Length: 315
Length: 219
Image (cartoon, rainbow over all chains, first blue to last red; front, top):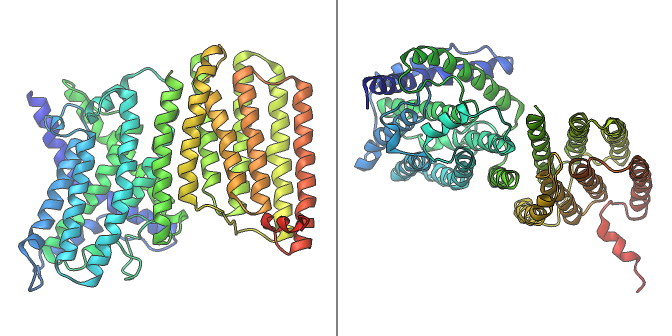
């Protein structure tokens, strides 16, 4: 471990924490524009966070300590996840702590805790949201794993940093497996981040909400942490997508100058990705909850076929 | 360069397979026809690329033929049929869609396994795509089996022909021109005849459900 590694790791965490709300704001702004509404400011998520951090947190009488601890656990999971994904540099001292499989586990940990907290208070909306969240989670997780496995079959490693290095450095080749994995990954990340075809992040209509139902009981700084964690999750997923499918421009070990260039490249890629997400969300209609298993089964099958195609074409 | 183009053909094959899966999971007839058109377009591009790489000009001709037939003529005919039958939305499946997709993945594994030893014998440009083409054929076959209505069955039949065509171009650089013209004509006539059939079926039973045809049996 050298000094550049530490610097790039620290820089990456700071960038993730600072940029995540901006990405959410960017997507919301484009969504509003595409739907012919007047858009909220790009800085709106920061204002919301600021407002929530300054408010008192109200906790229900019979809430257990778990309820208070969960926002910190969820935020910690998401912050760790976005520091493992190579966004700026592949020289990350924290990266050996978790490979792609552990990363999926990290997301699962956050999901389990937030569902427990939603059921903790005992309101009906909380447990409804928790059940739906677990339904989506258990279908989305294998699909996400299969996507990561497709990429690791090509790069012959499950460590995300090695995957990015291998994918960015090989000679130009077209991998049909990655096309399948890309489509599957888009479907999974829409479901996991509570975006439109599966859940509407802007809704408070009781019967259709999933993510909002989970966090209904939180207020003040707890809510701020969870909102921030949701932004971080979107950021982490976008960065996994960029790392697997557009790995160019990420700095490597012993290249401090490339680190300077990596930040504008990352911002550019995220801006395009966020715009495409807004377009996708505008074009799609929210589907019935009973159609979600079909949607995610489709994602899983695409990812599996991607792996099969890779094995077929490699022989 | 030729290596990259071969990989491009592989990618197009993968796209074809993806579209076959999209067709299996699709409930709406209108989208089904659009997916079929897209599949035809992918086929045109892949035929043209194989023609360019191997320097066989007759493949350009067959790409042109495919374009006229499968991207323009047949989709227009199908659109006209569903407009006149007024069936734009409903597709009824005999098995629910997630199960169909699970069967589909079994079919894909079967096709890949079957094609691997055959592909070993071949020396052609994109021999790996034989498995993909076979999987496309079987998936379209599956679609014909699981759909109860006549129009999706016809589309499944046409998609099956797409898969066969892809197998022919990628594995053996295309069929002889006479055979190709014959098949093209057959498919066109087939669509016309099936279109007439669909009107007859509906006139007879007030529905396009194929299961009604069982009533025609002698008691």
